[in-house]
Amino acid sequence: MRRLVSEAILVSLLGALLTLGGAAPAASAADQPGDAPSSIKIKSSGFSMQEAWDELTRQMEAGGTTNWVIVSLSLIGVAFILERAFRLRRKYVVPAGFAEKASELWEKKALGDIERLCERKEYVKTPLARIVAFLVKHRTAKLDDLNDVAGDIASRHLDRHAMLSYPILTVATLAPLLGLFGTVVGMIESFDTVASAGALVNPRMLSGSISKALITTEFGLAVAIPSVFFYSMFRLRTGYLFNLLEEQASTLIADWFIQPAAKEAAHATAKAE
Image 1 (cartoon, rainbow, N blue to C red):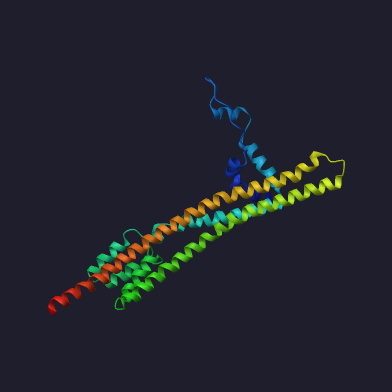
Image 2: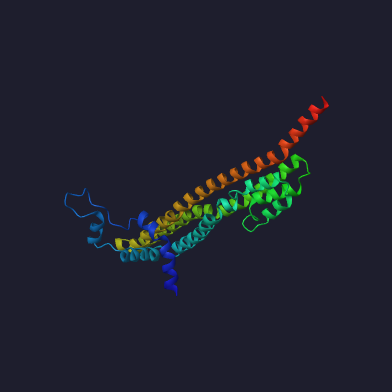
């Protein structure tokens, strides 16, 4: 069972470590005419996925406990990345076509239909549907109050989405720090080995500690780099969706409350004259 769990964890980092760790052999200089393609050269050099897997397993063992903590942290980051990729979509914030449907029903004065539209399964949890439901329910309130509460609803949802992105940033911050911690531990072990060996120092005695120092840094960076990328992309996506939410909510408030009020005021002025 432990081997199966270890293999499942290691697979998640295999691609990144092959790229960052340089597991693949370096490419030859320029291909000469008649030479085989690069992929064939790699195959003929003896490189295989099994060798990459063995190398990754060796690095995990060499890194020790620190590497396992980094990998466990990376799984948390992957979980939140998948959650954000699934939940941070337009249909969960500003469903396409929802504002148009609500406007059509408003023009027909079908307020009950708007409330039922907001309660439909695909819309009920979206911030735009909750804003529309509030506007319909409190349509007789002051315009300033409607604007304030609509903004509060949008802000609460924005904060929730932002909070669900913070764990990815936490992983991106802690992973290189853990790698640095492993580096420090490895260097301390190296110096202890030198101190205890005295004049009989053998370079092989230091290889394990130095390897641990470098490998933990490698793993920490392999986790941190994609985490920073995904966090930045999700922040951009969140900003875009909530700008779109603000735009559509403001348009609905203007069409439903501001323009009719302005027309009534103009009509009353014209009638008074």
